[in-house]
Image (cartoon, rainbow, N blue to C red; front, top):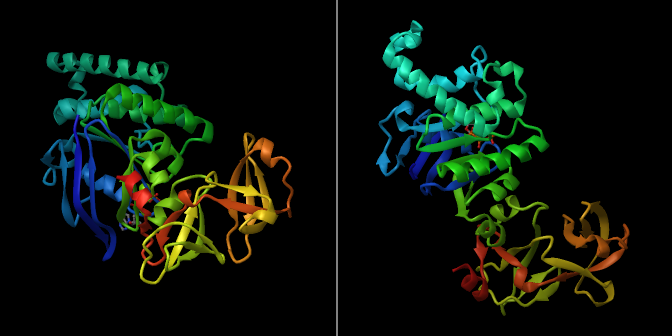
Length: 383
Ligand SMILES: Nc1ncnc2c1ncn2[C@@H]1O[C@H](COP(=O)(O)OP(=O)(O)OP(=O)(O)O)[C@@H](O)[C@H]1O
Ligand SMILES: [Mg+2]
């Protein structure tokens, strides 16, 4: 097993920069997810690590050794693709055996089907069979070994693709959106299987997804990448509760975080839609900020006593919880508040209600740079 270190990787396609000085350190045995919107360069970075694409600048180390000069086969990492990339004409067994045979037998032995005849090759085949059967049992596909990929469901194909990666005992697994072709229910199942697999193998996993919920539930750490740059790396709860950048705050969390434009006045208070909230923050030079809070970090109250009053514009019943959308005068987007079923059941569309904000839960971002501005208390908690 091995750590992966990516240092200052840059890559452009036709003069268009895709990755800009990306650095990442994935620890030995860690499950790190790379998340970001479509087109931000996630697959490109994975392909560079696997050696399928060449970087313009920067270096990749696997297990503490530079692999920049090594071709993909020698890097000893297994890539699992969204599209499974199985050979359609081969059985499940032969699909799983292909990388093993490729590595250990000469082209001559493979090409002429001599694998079954030569004693050394026969011993190897027996070894492969044991490995493939054990892996298939672990993945629950041992009854499918003689089938062709076309005779399998999406989830079964995905398991074969995983199995083909596992039998090689690679130093690290690189997975590029392996669940995106599965329906929602199956995705939950295979997601749990991949997490269990990570625990069982203790291998290094670099997992690409644009589904933040998937990343939050599976990973030791998450790296958020946007516009070719890593914006933040941290444990799921850190990036959720303590985002360093407004783009991270907006990307992580469902329902989305609420963001309202405001400013910080001379005494460090936040002024939001004409109302002041105590914050104790050093304002940016121009004073303009974006104030953000999670749907469960604010509440609704009686309109008469509230600092901010709005109108209920939409009610989303999630079953256990209810999301109340509140239109505030002066704000374009409604604010979303999560309430328990018991509390929210009496709310009606068009009701006038107050918004109760907890200034300790407000996240403040510089309007120009999007960077987080912390109060002394938040700085203390973060460190
Ligand atoms: N071989 C290539 N030639 C030219 N442009 C490319 C090539 N590969 C990728 N790109 C471009 O680079 C950008 C990043 O692509 P990449 O596949 O890495 O994105 P991604 O983050 O994996 O997106 P998605 O979530 O949609 O899979 C895209 O704009 C894409 O069109
Ligand atoms: Mg991709």
